[in-house]
Length: 104
Image 1 (tube, rainbow, N blue to C red):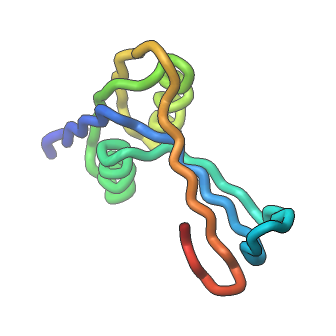
Image 2 (image 1 turned 120 degrees about the vertical axis):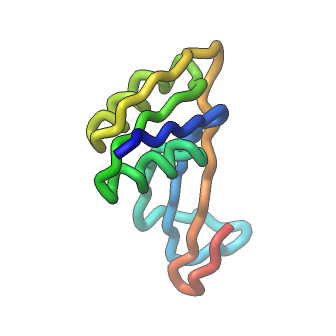
């Protein structure tokens, strides 16, 4: 089987925070949090590895997270090569309100 090659030019740290309810003007405590690596190429590489096909993920990553991204992909059985760039890897934040299921 031929190897699939993915390219991620803008990887991300995807942070998801669950709260009971969002009430403006009040303190909101988190019920749960989760962080994972994402970006289109990383997400595709994860899916390809999950079905057992050989895959390599290539891309650019902020020097702050390049090594953790590569280690994460390695733990999934994905080969990777990321060029380190100055600066930080972007972070996406999702807040999920458990009471209503709303996502922001």
